[in-house]
Image 1 (tube, rainbow, N blue to C red):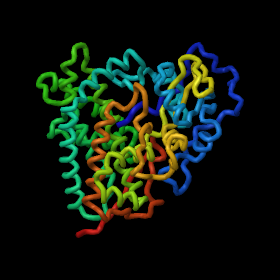
Image 2: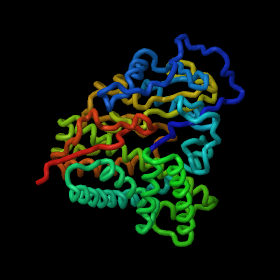
Image 3: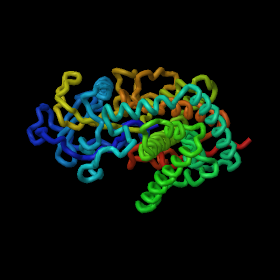
Length: 423
């Protein structure tokens, strides 16, 4: 599931001297590197690795003229994400990409704790943490197995020549979000239709906005239904919390949907692409299902589908010998930190037997992904089941023809055509 939003708004911190010369002796990086090398669908932009080796905390020039920092080293990223002197509030930040929103955004909407600091963030976080109980996680694990089996059955019936994103990667997390939120079975096609439209690039802006509005309206109605007749699900639990308004519950539901759907779907699809592109690793998981949990951690490290996150310094802070000034927006490159050779030997090698402890695929600190255990369960169940059911699974088109999500905040593949040998 997704952690902090990587698209904060461009806005100065009032009272801080952004116009003064930056004290860093290096010339600022003029733009956040986002272009990946041709033929390297799993590697971060090469300029980021060069920066990590030369100056892991580098000055970065933002499109609006602000000079902040780009952080690429593992130790520095981890330290910043764990430090309360760095804020996650959207309204304090500048946007690092030229096609980002113009002008400042308002504060995080009700329930969106990823754009909040303590104490607001703490209140929501504690509420939700108490809902991810061992009993609920155990029950959800059984449902992941059930939905995975159903999904693979449907995939097998369709036969070779399918888009794995459509038939496997999207349905499983969508069904699990429905299960978590308590969406009635009769409504799941409607709910799924909204979520697919919201994520699609093949619809107009107006259609996507209409789907987002419809989804919000649906959640409002669902919250009212849960207040009237609670069931055994997270939304029902939240309606029992004193002082929590319907709008807050709707906001928390929308946050869980956004955090738990697109990221997990892309990890399933992009993870399969990585395995098919590394046949020896595909074979390792196929032949030894006990590797599953270890393999998932390595895929989270190796792929890092949420490439970066942002913070703003609330005061002057020294990190790894570098002074980051109050008011500076700091872009933390999670994907490059997860390829830091000082933390992970031979980091550009996918090795499912590696113990990738300490990776930042779910972020770090108080904003670390709340639903990470559910995401791990979905991946650890679904991917081994996929390779076991289809041991001859392969790409149906050359790897260079796979359309990559280079134009989106969450990286991965738009489509993944696959085939297999029918028995």
